[in-house]
Every structure is written in C-alpha cells, then in structure tokens.
Length: 56
Image (cartoon, rainbow, N blue to C red; front, top):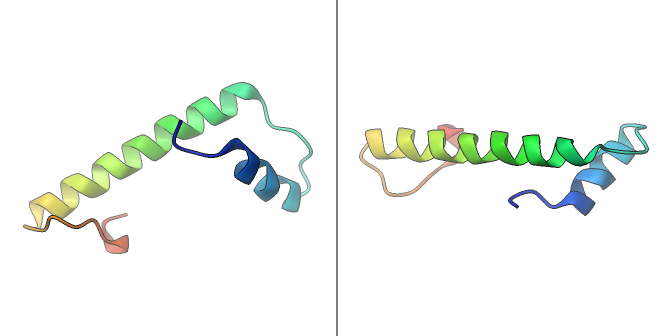
C-alpha cells in the first residue's frame, strides 16, 4: 500500500466527506503507482537518476 488511509481520510474530511469506500484506497494506490512509474520514465529519458517535481 502506497497511500496512507488515515491521511486520505483526513483530506476528505476537510472536503466535507465523512467516509471512503475500501476500493477507493486500492484504486488510488494504482493511480499513485502509475504516476511514480511515469515520473521515473521521464527522469530516465532526460538522462537523470533523480525524479523531480517537474516529472509529475
């Protein structure tokens, strides 16, 4: 698990949402994983071994 459920829950509470479904965290994890992999690919294509904010 990449994302932390408690932190996500705090964020959505701030947006006025009380609950999150279990499958939301799983889906969010997959999106985050793909985002990281895409950023790593961009860094590598640019000849860097460090992922930067601009890669996102």
